[in-house]
Image (cartoon, rainbow, N blue to C red):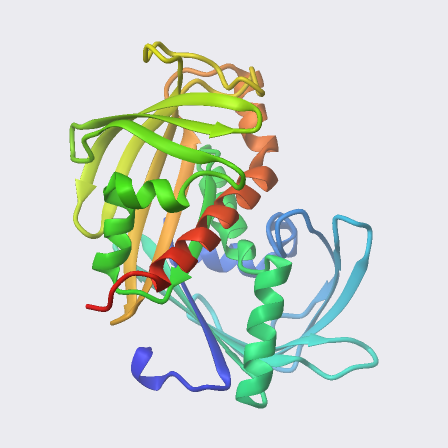
Amino acid sequence: MAASRKPNELYITRVFDAPVKTVWEAWTDPQQVGQWWGPRGFTLTTRSKDLRPGGQWLYTMHGPDGTDYPNIATYHEVEKYARLVYDHGATENTPPLFRVTVEFKEIRGKTTMDMTMALATPEAAEQTRKFIRKAGGNSTWDRLAEYLHGQSGHDKFVINRTFEAPVDLVFEMWTHPEHLAQWLPPAGMTTRFFKADIRTGGSAFYCMEGVNGVMYGKAKYLEITRPERMVYTQGFCDENQKPARHPMAPTWPETMLTTVEFVPEDTDRTRVTVTWEVFGDATEVERDTFHQAKAGMTGGWTGSFDKLEDYLTKQPAG
């Protein structure tokens, strides 16, 4: 896709851990699409959906503040399990905002979704890119990933971000404590590592300090495959590394499992996917606390990713 990039187009690629039939149905079944379509916090009402060339999908998105956003999507191509082309963002009184082409391809049981949004001019594309980012529109595809996980009985939190940096450099930002400390802590907090043996089988002990005091944490690295993937558990502890609860959320699960995947989208572009889930035994209250906190997790990871994005621009070239 990189070779055919055009300045008036926006591109999104996601890989979902589900067969193409399942992903296609999540897109095209009105009951299923209502479970995930739109930025985090939005809900959806479908008035009608006529999935054929020339047909339309009439729906209204409901913002978390109560604002309604009516939409009309008009389909131009419908190739079952493979391709959709439609105009997006029209209303009864306004024309479409852009044309969307979505291609689905299954490889070894997983589905790659390649999306292209074509706008009239490069300036319109840049304006739309900024609007989507500000509105949290890319969390739509995170919600789809979570919905697909939920279909198999696993509740997970997913968030993606594409960085304008090569995959090796982005991977370094996650595996060296001097880099992690610069971007990972939430806004208003700092991180200090007492121990950081970041390798398969290694562990880390750290603290985060802020206006609400000091929180200690431990991480155990289960898998590090350079530069594609890292998997680790993490949990709160006290200053002696004994397990402890989140000081401001006592029903937060004791241990979380984090999976981070790094995929080059181009020579100097890397997509990072973070998947978070409860690890080990947990009560229903703890699992519900995790589920209900997804909006807050989105805000926290977005803040960290914003800091990482800025930090990457300060790294020496090459």
